[in-house]
Amino acid sequence: MAAPDSGLQVVPEPSDRLVWQPSQQLAGHVPSKEHFPGAGVDLSAEGSLRSGFCGGRRRLFVIGLLVACVLAAVVGGAVGGTRHRHNNPQASSLSGTSASGSPSSTERPKSFSAVYKQGDPGSGIGGWDLLSTDDRSFAFDYDHSGKLDHLVFYRPGSGAIFILKNANCTFSPVYRQPAPGEGIGGYDLKSPADLAFAFDYEHSGKLDYIALFRRVYAQNDPGSGIRGFDFRSPRDRAFAFDNNHSGKLDYIATYQPGTGTFWIIKNDNGNFSAVYAQGSPENGIGGYGLTSTANSAFAFDYEHSGKMDYIVLYRPGNGTIWILKHDAVYQQGDPGNGMGVGGFDLSNTADSVFVSDSGSTGKQDYLVFCRSGFGIIWILENSKGKFTAVYGQDNQGSGIGGFDLKGSQDFGFAFDYGQTGKDDYLVLYRPGTGAVFITEGS
Image (cartoon, rainbow, N blue to C red; front, side, top):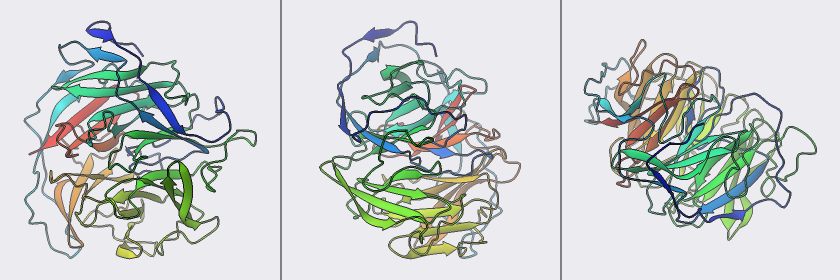
C-alpha cells in the first residue's frame, strides 16, 4: 500500500497505550484464508455472519489513543480520491409496507448523494488503497470529542492500519501503519483472524478506545479470552453495548451463533466480569435461542433515547428478526420463518443490517437493511414499535447515492462526516477494488 508521496509532514508518534490485554503474549499468524466481517457490516452473499460492531476472537486488547498525530496533511486537495457531489440519486417507490400494514408517511431523506466518491476500480481514501479483499473499516472517536468522525481502516494479517481524519472534505492519516506494518498499541494485526471495533472503556460516553480480537485455530495459540468467554470458536462475535441504559457503550456483548452462547461483560477499571452468561450449549438471550450459525446481533436505540440499550438479533434467509430489552419488544420468527420488518422480508442470506442516524437527531435509531449483489437498500424508521421504510431501493435497485451495491462483498456503516455528533452519513466500500463512497441524505 503506497503512502502519499507529498503534502505530508511527520509529527510526533502517537502515544498509544494498551489499557487491557490477557497475560499471554500475542501469537503471530494464524493459518486461514477466510474473510471475516469486521466492524461495520458484511454485505456479502458469501458471508453468513454480519452485524455492526461485530467480530470476536480468542484474545482481546483494548487500546486508548492519546491525542497525537503520526502524519498531518498540509492544506491541499483530497488525498486518495476526489470530493464529488452526486446530484442525480435515484429513490424508487417502496413496494413494502410497515409492520402494521400501513405505508410510511414519515418525511425523511428521500434521496442520497455522494460527498466522497471512488468508484470501482478506485484509489481508496486518505492514502489507504482498499485493494485487499481483507480490508475492513469502522468509525472511531480518535480525538475524544464524542463524535465518530474518524475512519479506521485495517488489514488483518498484514499489520496495516490507518486512522483517517476529515478536514474540510480532505482525508489524511493521523495514525499510519502501511503493509507490512506493526499494528497498533502492541497488537500486531498479523493474523487474518484479527478484528476490531470502537469501545467506551472509560464510561465517558465516547467510543475512543479500540477493542481487538483474534479467534483461535490451534491449542497452543495463547490467550484466555475475557473473563470466562474464551473466544475459542471461529464463530465467536462481539460488539459494544449499553447494558445499564447509561447512554454509554461500555459493556461488551459476546456470542457464538449456533450454540446458544451469549454473554454480556462489564468493565470496572479494567476488571471484566459477566453480568449475563449463557454457556454452550445454552438458551441464547431473551427467548432467542441463537441455534443457527447464521444468526447475528448488534446494539440499537429503539426508544430514540440516545442509548444503544436494545439488542437486535436476526437470521438472514428466513425473515427472523427480534429486538430485545430484557424481553422481546419486536418479534418475527420463533426464531424460525418470519416476515422480516417494515416490509423488508430478510428472505435472502445476503441480507445485512446496521444502525444509522438518518433523522440527524444524534440518535442511532434507524435500521439500514442491505442486500449486496442486488442493489437493494432500505432505511427503516421506528415509531412506537411500528417500522416503516423511509428510503428503499427494491429488486433491480440502484443502491444509494451512486454506490450500486452490486458487489458481493460490499460493506457499510454510519459515520459522522459533518463532525456534528450525528452519524447521519453512510460509508459504503468494496474491499479489493479501491471503491469507497460517503453519502448524505436530503
